Length: 316
Image 1 (cartoon, rainbow, N blue to C red):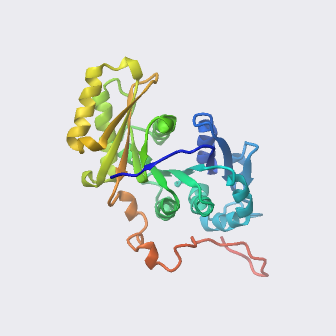
Image 2: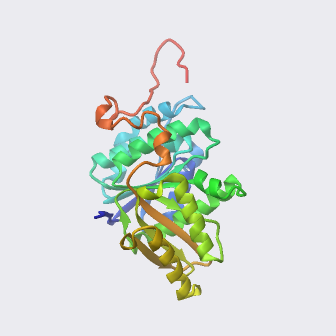
Image 3: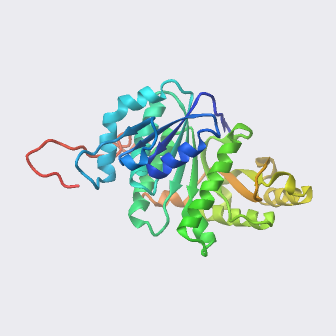
């Protein structure tokens, strides 16, 4: 039996870093939410309700330094989240700010007993310097969240090698918009979910197959326990086509654990949200991820550094 995550008003969307802040600002009206942007870069904070994580004079700070400096803003973050029931976190774990801030901010929200829904965007394979850091941040973000939705741009690129990285971002961002729009009308599973989608196709069966190919890049079929199929296109889609794609999914997964949600949209497309119980490709991003956090002496304190006033240079 699957537990479902319920979005309870009032809702606050927290955008972390540039990508996260942009998504949060775009989606706040969709879910009737307030917005808070947090970043170490002033350019990301073009919104009145924002918190700057200052790294002082260091212009190219490490993830650990950003995370350490974020601790100085704990009281401000608590003040901003206090009056809300549900917190939605938007974090691009391929970026420094998203990877640095997501463990800290999600931990604060958890300590305040909030319902936490997190969207985590994972890096491309060629962003090698962020693979390890994103794996660490995702592990802690999942621990601190009631529900986590993972968006893997690299899986979309693997299943569609003709796409540019920019086009991948465009496609996944549209899917995030669609999924967020559906939060009030459909249920999502607690814990970990993987979102998969495809290039917009007139042929919905092709769109579905592309979405499943993307999903299989991240998780084995045996680990997929429940799938929510969001079909966009509304009244333009023949009933026979809807039955066909529903039968395809029901034939692969357990039919009782497959659900279809219809939404109106200018384009026809399919977005899948699959609940995962088992190993995913992201477990390999952090080589120490196989160690249970209750066996790790420092799990509750993510690695960070602070700026110390010493008479010797601090190297970052």
